[in-house]
Image (cartoon, rainbow, N blue to C red; front, side):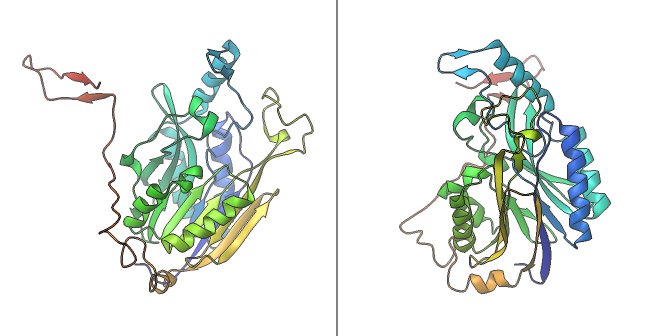
Length: 324
């Protein structure tokens, strides 16, 4: 369990929908600001690279899709990134340049499917891993696929045990327990949820997991969306579409920074890693406060694939088996 102090930062800012190159430039800008503040860890919002298309319908209704909606999805698909790939290389270079651990929300492209994900970059530029959101919420399911348990990793870093749970995954008790089981200490929660209740959820999770929680959300106004984006929020460029609510919470539920609403901000806090052991003195959700004789959680950590490579066939070539 970690000791000492770590300065961490959470970025609350607008990003560039359908424009990953612009988003990478923003990551560099905010990373530089965080480093200037002495941060060693920086957390960015959900779908920061690729964009969260709030208000888009993609032409989808029950029983039908439109040609215009298909074209918008194709545009979104082009803006998504491969993991690993050229954009994660660029993010790694930013992490290395500023000597930071970066946790960045991305829209990942894997073949014809998009996933809401998070990538973890080390200060030497290494891609530590990725998370894919297990359960897209509501209309997100039209454009994002479902993740599986194989990316629910907690990474053992020089700062501490680092992991991420995305947006409404934080309302899934089993997902949280899987992270607590791995000893998560730096619980990152990129989100698109700006409601007051999200802040309450973050404080609860910090107390439940006896971990530091760092949650990051975008602040987006109508003016921040492309001119040809759907306008369900009206035409006033100053109308707030995503209000933020980012914060940093300590392992006893104490608010260390935020929440901030309606404005861009860099939230910074010093995390006393020794507080983790002190907090677990009287509560450890998967340790001395657990009751495995009453409750047990079974987690499938295996990747789930539609097509699984098999051993070479009798003809010496690879055989592909399609799952039922």
